[in-house]
Image (cartoon, rainbow, N blue to C red; front, side):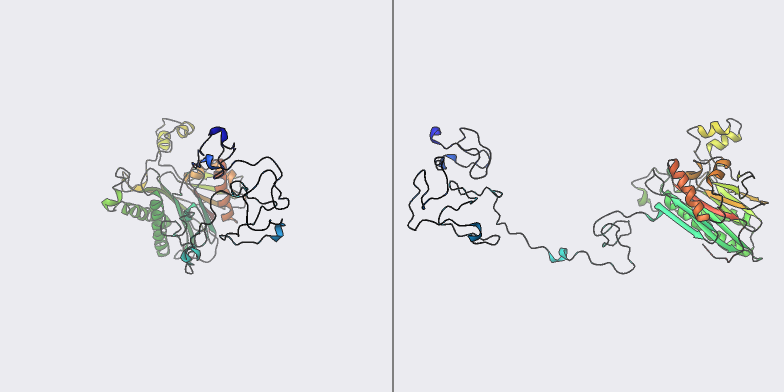
Length: 433
């Protein structure tokens, strides 16, 4: 009957909290009526082998002795200790239910499966020269840029690039807002037929609204560099060489549109790959620039008392508004349509119209070739000159890093690429990109 049931606060089987009057455990269903009646409240230490407060079942052996903890026989995990001959002082076992209250009620005899020796050995060590994961430092990186062992995405090589080629240098950075770097650049040095040196830099900015803009900028910059390295030593005038380099870059980008139809099944409405291009060639006496799009070239003289200048005109909506006299420059570039380009390299361009120009500076300085990721934060020539360090001609790589940092400090909303080319070209050994 309920009045005869022992009053327990927890189930003897699973230690689930109980309420007064429970006949079965709500967690494991243990029959609480089968629990022996609780002995009277009295000391539990055995005195002369018999517990006070009520007789226990008689046993045919002598009364148990009281043992110290050190006298108990130890057992290995998974073994069972021999049952004690009587209650032990300090024992964690309840004389009522036999439940151990010093450990989890779940059985501890589960056998753990032996580890797979193939897994325990870890991934095989990649062969020498193989690109290794930056996270687990053991897995090989596949062609898609993911670790074959842990699946970690690897940093893209184009997220931040730096190069120094003789007296010129360039830096390109992904910026703070874009998920990848769609800019590209190439640097090169060559020798003219009269033995004088020539240096050049090409910067290309992928059009984000087109498909594969990073491939377009890379293909254009490489094709332009190859054309310049082939034309300049043969005596082609630098301005003509620049024109031919832009045409070669255009062909390279156009070829990217000739892809299998299956490659665009999932993105049928995207434009063909496209990019802008800007470049500069420097000789001991001549400065040549060429461009299509809105990337720019700036001239910054070493003597800062002389005025700096922007050497290119954007192929953009804002430039067209200014040229047509419909807006002044401040109004045009403040408009949200300002950076919509009207000229680019790509199969869907209206027409290819390379712009080139030649200059003969009468004093030394540096040529800054950059994408709009930089000049957005130093648009006027005077602003760009303020950002260029005074020792730029002697430290072109440092200068390029400073200018990229200037753009990142300003917000880094776009990819940032800048090349620094001293004028005139120092008389040193020639090389190639």
